[in-house]
Image 1: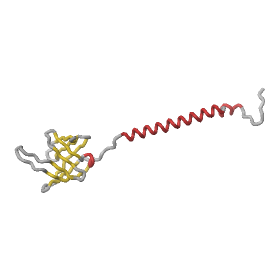
Image 2 (image 1 turned 90 degrees about the horizontal axis):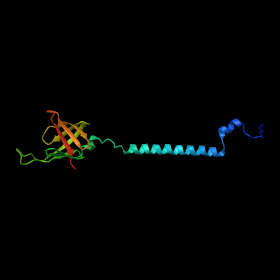
Image 3 (image 1 turned 120 degrees about the vertical axis):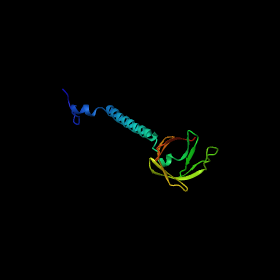
Image 4 (image 1 turned 180 degrees about the horizontal axis):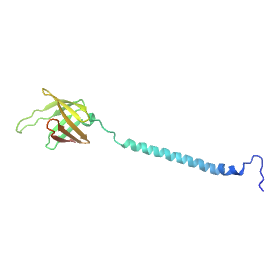
Length: 146
């Protein structure tokens, strides 16, 4: 026979509320789970921050580029550029300054003094610039000069 004293809890609630020690364990478990959740979120956000952002073509094209024959072309951030001249070949080619603009992400316009603008198709993949002429579809590959 079980005797009850006034204020005692019925037997059915003893299992749900548990002893003070069980309640402390449960609180510690919740705290640890919350801590692991926060740590997991911090790791996920940290990894997301490590993924390089895609660079716009306007920024990606800036720099000095060299083709397999040693020819170079420079694009400056102020939308100007420079092609150094060549001497000693069949014909001498003078230094050529130019301005440029991007029509969209894949088309580059180049304006040289006294000439009509030339539009070429471009593709920039890291340190590789591929450029294809509109008229003859000839493809030129340049690498970023180090």
